[in-house]
Length: 369
Ligand SMILES: O=C(O)C(=O)C[C@]1(C(=O)O)C=C[C@@H](O)C=C1
Image (cartoon, rainbow, N blue to C red; front, side):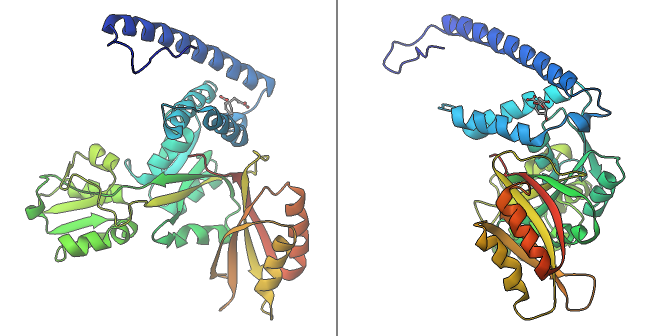
């Protein structure tokens, strides 16, 4: 398509430009419909499958979105274009039947935002009361996938999520990175009315410097999610919540302070997508493993050296009590690559001799912006 919008041209005529846009919209719409028909053909090519989850291909979706990013020459950002194509794929997939996705509820949590970012608006979100319930719902088949927070750029690991993997058989099928903006929200919108604030401990932690500087004496009441905090704050004029903008919209709260109040401007939370199987490689993947080490000298060194030997980059390592015996630890390790890659196969093979137990938690596409 020719790009004849030049900055040194005379002011364009509004109706001419709109006629041009109408033509482009018609072409886009026809192409979206054609794409949806082809996506339906893909579904038929996969044969008679039992449920929507059987048609879902996260590795293919990641490849489609990476091509969008690679092709992008502006003026729209990668993030905006990825969002548009994510929604198109979400709608194409939902032609069979929408995916059911469990997340930490109620409506308005950052987990719900992560679900929308990763699965699009055509997926069906199922709000759960806790992270444990998200795992259970995917385990018992009530949800096809679950989305749970695993770490925050400023506050580190969400330990309850890691600990669930000690016993759960679920697999990690994806990751989502979400920029998190925290707002001070209340029914009246007046800062002088506030005597107590409800929020999730993570949100209090992400805004602690702001709170110390601006509202040092108000009571801080931890609740199970920041949307739950917003839900409680709507019932009283002397209460406020720290939560995301969407929680404010869901529960009809006003912004007490216009701007976000998180202490770090690049505040980002990483979420994991939980499923019941490992999907094939997308070409740019991460593998998460859980390693129970033997109580002997050099145990951790022996666990890590096969990865170094086979040139595999370690992105993250975190230790947690193993829950099997006192003072025994399990290591959560994130590695660059897919479990089907040859170097990874070799490294994992060598690791078996040195570890008490190795559990592959999943191999999944690295988050697309
Ligand atoms: O390529 C496929 O396997 C499809 O089903 C098509 C499509 C798409 O719209 O591009 C839809 C859903 C899948 O999760 C991946 C991709």
